[in-house]
Image (tube, rainbow, N blue to C red):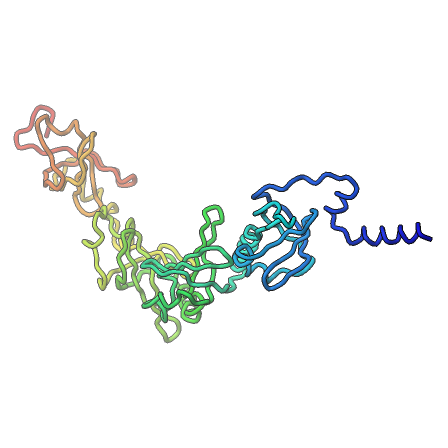
Length: 371
């Protein structure tokens, strides 16, 4: 009887042992943990201040204090019995516990939520952390995201600092985990109805359409132009970007010399994306190269301006968008040319299809071989 009772007690005790204790009891060797090591375990207890995890060791792993606080949003989603991945902070305390961090698991979970929100175009809740001239930094489940100033709704655009310390909804615009880049939009939520109207207006626009618009903002990479698009009886204001390369047929060195805020310009639509227009000022005008063959025939003489000097000659502008090369072999020894200087040239060769123009220098006292 004693033996049977003893066996029953032994079996009962074994059933309550963790895998680590069983291995220890029967002589199995448990490899020592190291700081920073990633391990998996099962949640066995969850309280308002700590999480206990069975990690198949002599004692459980513990997530508490600072590690608990930093992963609190992720911990809210956990239930007893869930498997989690954790990092070792302290391999073993004097009490025999392993102190763990769930930061990596929270980060993985956060990126999954961001990807899902982007794919489903659904809002997420973030916490405003700081404000600057370019936008607002926010936190989402331990990750840092950025809301550009252009993506803050009308109600907050004048004072984005009001978002700091507040929880609010945003939508995901761009994600790049390798670069740790998270770009968000508050405007997509707060101005949703206006954005829907703008998208509807843009859907009526076709590449090649020409509009008159107003320059609203000048940047170093181009300018934004507001155009009016008709939807039934209404007109909707829509902004499009004119990249600096599309502002003029001539080379643009100073955007402010071409236009300023409030300037009325003609633009042509060259790109249509959901919620975004790409515009061109130069393509709304005639391409000067279309008439170049007739205007600049071989041997014809013209006045031009030196725009650039290089080791192989000088570039001469005959009109905006029409520039030719005066090769160094066509510049007599001792002749000095300066940028901005006006010169008399003649056309040696022209090919409008490849936009190529070769020039010679008209001389008052021409050396042998010069015209």
